Image 1 (spheres, rainbow, N blue to C red):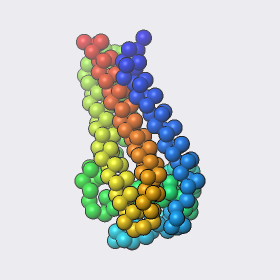
Image 2: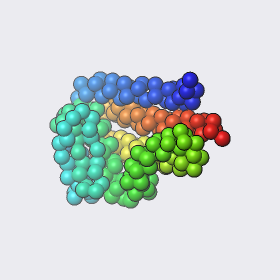
Image 3: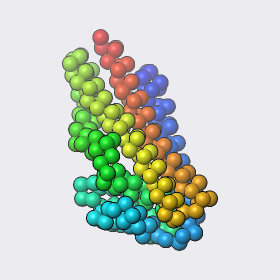
Length: 224
């Protein structure tokens, strides 16, 4: 029996499933609540970018459900098909959150800069960590297991650094929407609910990564 999986990974995985279900439920609920401003998300996003002095950021429609993201390399804000021209409070919140990332990029927000610089390293280490550890585990090589652990720790740190980036983008989103008048006082609550639900998915991803790391540590101890 894999005790480490039961103790560390399974609870985190269940939390992740719950977080995914919550963000989908929040989106489904508030995508049917329309903002009084009546402006579609892409228009609101363009106005918020303009107000922030980021007129060089393009906005594009992106296929799929909740595929919204900001690409700092090409300075493109991509809004999913269900968000792009919707006037719902959910769509405005999601669009403003991505504008928040663009603003972070524009002002040189340190956690985002660190995160972006770590993307290629984190991609490599996260892909190599488990194979390295498992090879070391089966051939009883402490060096390979430790290297796998070190690589996986890099992936965990990447997830941890992502948290302040996402929470800050949501804070900026709500402030921009309220100060610009695109959402009224009572509409800020459902917008906040959508953003908080989305933030939980990043907390859950971090919990899964930490749980997996602790599991690998436990397995490493069995080979000493």
